[in-house]
Length: 210
Image 1 (cartoon, one colour):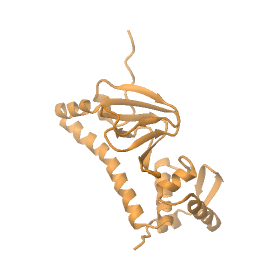
Image 2 (cartoon, rainbow, N blue to C red):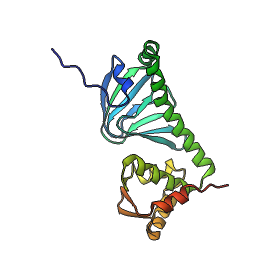
Image 3 (tube, one colour):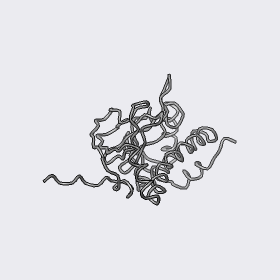
């Protein structure tokens, strides 16, 4: 007799869904693309993925999925694997069926899905009202909280991070080098930032362009 598949990592309500499908994705592979057909909800069980909107000239990074993060495919967002990823997905109708059977689980489900909208609104607020150095400070503080350490692993390339912050690669490099000279951060290597002066980052993150 085959063993039952392990429960998905992520919110408790996901374990109540039936008919989950697991897939592996290599770095650079598309996990979700707009207008792909069947609407599905998925949880990232392992790896790291980027959520973005694609325009004619460039892509705008909306955020990142880490293990336990969820996403729905019926959006205009692209989800790209940055590392080898393991994903489990279900038809959206399975979630709606769960809501009908257990309304309290539906509240939890919509709360988790709503996190994506919150992150998108934060991005819009940053681009509209904060200068680049404040956006960079907010990003570093956010990653410090998420990664649970003053030693932060940067996600993706410098160019991808610059795009996510709404600036150029050259401007981002200049700001990072300035922070190093000021003793706010250190750069042990190209993919890691060590926060040395959290207070200065908090002050800069609060700045607005108005």
